[in-house]
Image 1 (tube, rainbow, N blue to C red):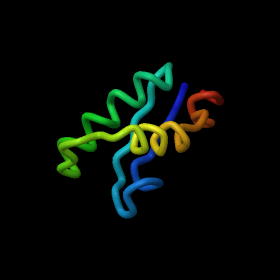
Image 2 (cartoon, rainbow, N blue to C red):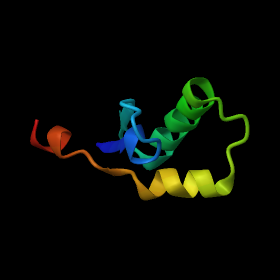
Image 3 (cartoon, helix red, strand yellow):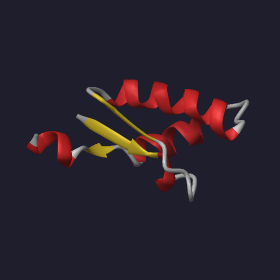
Image 4 (cartoon, rainbow, N blue to C red):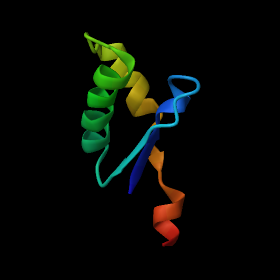
Length: 63
């Protein structure tokens, strides 16, 4: 299971997403960025920053 925590990119944001693939995590995160943070344009650098912060979800791995 893959995990992205928005607070690693947007300080103070507690939103997170878990999914089986990085691609699904990125898709969900882009939607969150648009809705919660008012991002109207998602640049390639934003996608790269999201991907760089996706980690293996250690909690899911032990469950």
